[in-house]
Amino acid sequence: MMKFKPSLTLPPWRFLVVIGVLAICCVAISWRIVELHVLDDGFLKGEGDKRSVRHTVIPAHRGLITDRHGEPMAVSTPVLTLWANPTQLIGHEARWPELARALGTDPATFAERLKANASREFIYLRRHMTPQDGEKVVALKIPGVYSIEEYRRFYPTGEVAAHLVGFTNVDEAGQEGLELTYNDWLQGVPGKRQVLQDRRGRLIKDVQVVSNARPGNDLAMSLDLRLQYIAHRELREALKQFGAKAGSAVLVDIRTGEILAMANHPSYNPNNRSNLKPDMMRNRALIDVFEPGSPIKSFTVAAGLMSGRYQPTTVMDTRPGTMRVATMTVRDFRNYGMLDLSGVILKSSNVGVVKIALDIGAESIYQLLHQLGFGEYTGLGFPGESTGSLPARRRWPPVETATLSYGYGLSVTATQLAQAYATLANNGRRLPLSLLKVDQPQMGEQILPEDVSKQLLTMLRGVVDGEGGTGSRARVPGYQVGGKTGTVHKSIAGGYAKDRYRSVFAGIAPISNPRFAAVVVIDEPSKGDYYGGLVAAPVFGEIMSGALRLMNVTPDDLPALQQVELPPAKPEEGSRG
Image (cartoon, rainbow, N blue to C red; front, side, top):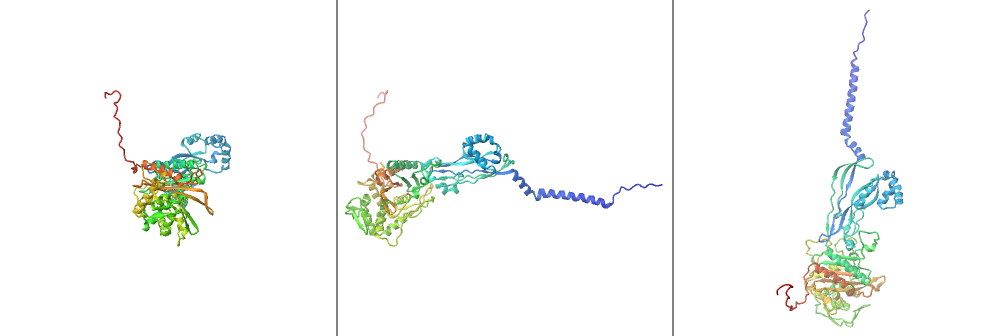
């Protein structure tokens, strides 16, 4: 009987099914590979980077602020800022006291702060430590404590130029002064560095610099630090001597319009602002306004000369030392009798300038004062600068005409007054003021005729050097100096205070070839003297003396050399004669 063996050959359709399944698997696997490595590459890489790749900031160096000779007035120094990840540090409570002592903080306060921020991943421990102190804390190797390299602003000149330079906040953003005005210019652009970190924030690898930090631009000021120190010192001593409330001094280079010194008191130390008061921060030379008083008489006389109705030799009758203008009585210090125009300036006669003003009209005086820059910004761009007040009238009543002529009824800043006197000294040409170093001076605008300017300079010299002049204490040996004193009653609600004054001196030197103009304002001297010639003029003299000598200005008031017969020279010891 025959036996049949079963056939091992699979049906064709089953083979095809197996092959098809395998092909589908290969296609699926290939598609997934393409999807992961091509289509979703950016997404997956991004997800991976989120867990390990970090970008840290490369701090940018803020630009230097220097004086005109390159002496630093504001610099950025490298410091370390310490921060912590509380989620990591919270588990190492035994080391908290050690860390607190290293940071110089109270352990109990530190522990309380850390517990209050236990769920956060970033808190500052201490900002702007010196690299040496910061490295000591980092060397403790306490888990969760890290450091960041930053910069801190430092001011080498301290309180001497604080009102001008200003200061930055803890993030090096300008807050006051030129630091604020030129913040965009000084501030650098931070860079970016790519690093690998583990899940606890520890650095694994410094991968690459994504973008380099771009340092800020340097700023060269017009100030001469030597002159700034002199102005600061002399102003401080005057305030102590006369018990004054405050003071300002401004020194201008007539040929360029550069401000070489601008000092204010009281001042503050921008490196330590723990006891800083708002009153100490004001740049009074640019912000505080006051009625200038007698220094305006120079421009009233100038308006009279420009009218053609007056000459320096024109005689004015100021008798009997008083004059009735509507409901007001104008008074001189005493009866000066007959005075020429030079005498009106020399004696500071209120009666004399009022007669000029009533004759030529207030409009011409107003127009001249406006062209000199009163009642408008100086163009320095300093934050908070005041414009003062120069009232415009369609019709000027006699009383307002009279008060305008001798410096009441308007308000100015010390800087505006300094610019006006600089214009007077610069052959009547007004130059824009600058707190930055000027390489190429501008042409400026002609305000006063040159002959009027020279006539006034001669008159102003008489105030300082002439017999009976009110500004004799502003003299500088070896130089011809001119100027105008002012003693101004301070305005209060309802009128003027009888026993509160501002002492003012505005002047120019040397008269033969003017180089500098300066204004000194002393607010409320309380110890005896309060006249501008006694209080402000000596400060002007010291500041101007320093400027003339340090800037090598040739003396123009030296006495003739006298021939002196010298004794015969003796032979030196040991010689044979």
